[in-house]
Image (tube, rainbow, N blue to C red; front, top):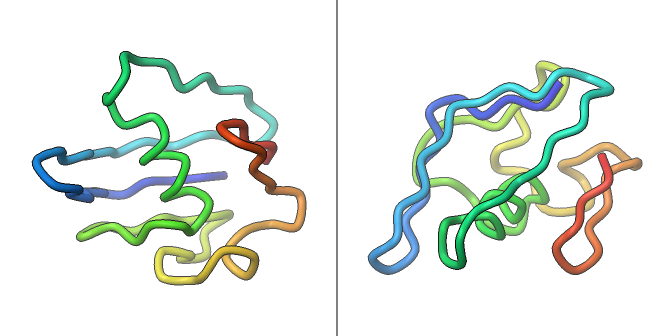
Length: 85
């Protein structure tokens, strides 16, 4: 399971805040207008950004500060704007 607990990240004047859980084996679409935070959310999941506050959990393990590659499951990959988890 992927969990965002009280996540916030600020980039310039934009702030993304998220509290969500994605159950195992589920499918989820991230949709929104340009500039709404879709890529920011995916960059947090992939470990390319670190939140200003909050925790990211993967199957109960805190992966918030781990770098890309070490932070995620081997089955998690990103190609342009698509993630496979």
